[in-house]
Image (cartoon, rainbow, N blue to C red; front, side):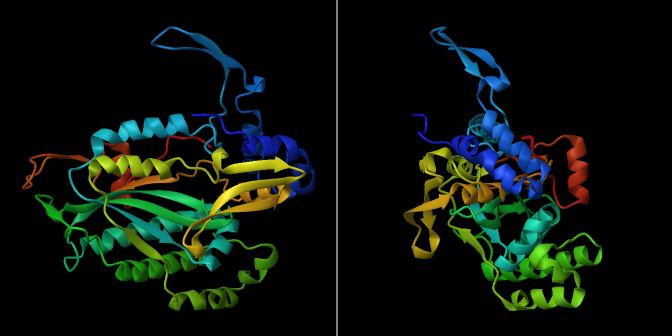
Length: 364
């Protein structure tokens, strides 16, 4: 693959110093580190190493990578390793792609409370899936799934949502048999949406009452509980966006598809079209107009601001696993044994206490 002509690192190197002068005081330590890591990635600053082809023996010198999970250049190896680790864990069953999105009002307050609100997003979505799937009226089984947090829209604005890849069936309540979804149908999205809304708002209000949610600047008035509840009132009745995409053609298609989501960053270098005269031009999809490909031009300062919106809190786990984290041997019409994710014993203990295991190997 040809190297992209323009990179996010180029934007930071050209305009990052001015951005820090103007905005450095309001940037988090994590945002400062991400900018620096991307600027120096694969440069002499990080030193180098010798690479050798395992076929012909050709050698070349190469600079070291920053390995930051927000860097557009450092996700390929992490993605490849993750996909390789998942190969043996797929079941011979349907898989569904389910997306949970919080309303704009929630996105607004989540930026000032990333760790707490993103955590609630995971918790509410996971409990929603597991509760509805366990209900005998719908499936009556314990499903397995993993969820990936994305915080951006194609235009780089703040748009937190979860991509979940879910088994099209699960273990019966007594753990002795496999219960399959109807062909091509997962769970009713209207039911999922309403429970997701209720759980999210319940957890959010509990977090507020526990003093875990903070408000600054234009949101400062929401520190008052009555005003906070008034702020939430409209979205108590609104439809929250939950949708299930059509099932994958088969387990072998799951990883190819999922690889697009697991280690994606806010914008890839391949989408950048130009960097000149203090402006950045990039491609984006306009989802309000049938996902048409369009071009956006931003001032470099605004481009950097938008990119940094998506820097996660240190140590925050953006890929989490839920469900039946065991090697399972059960009888099923088409196969005698099934394999799901085999976790370390301490991870399984955590999962039984907190609605499923969650971990991420990629560091901040």
